[in-house]
Amino acid sequence: MHFFHISVFMMLWCFIVTTKTIPGVIPLYWGFYIGDEEYKRKRYCLICNAFKPERSHHCSVCNICVLNMDHHCPWVNNCIGFYNRKFFMQLLFYLFILLWFITLTALPQVYEILYHCYTTRLHIADILIVKYIVTLPAYILVCILTVLNTMFFKCHVMLVLDNSTTIESLDKDNKEH
Image (cartoon, rainbow, N blue to C red):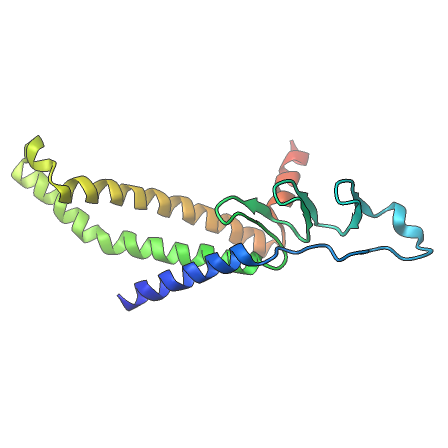
């Protein structure tokens, strides 16, 4: 049980830090130098009225330009950018560990319930016992969340290993088609 409590605590801490950390605001007057001949090549945000570095994008939800923006995450109500991507990846990792822990430790109990239902040939009234009605749908939901989180975590690990962002990978996919 100690492992479970530590994982829950770490996941909640990463969630709070990801939510509260500013994702990466472009410094004021970034890229503005008097007499700079390269200003025509720099990207400009028409909404913020400022030059912005490569790999930064304007978030329409937060209404700021985010440095090294990955995506705007509605689950944490914040953009994932340069300063909070580490905490977002830690959040996904702890959620991954926690969901797999719950899935694997609940499996014997679910197996016992299903085996009991099969061997005793329970009637509908017997199946409506709270133990059966709550445990089986909850376990199915946890299994679905485990699979979805595993795929999401794998996708983001691949992006980190490629030194890419979600926006860049989507742009790359659009350019290939």
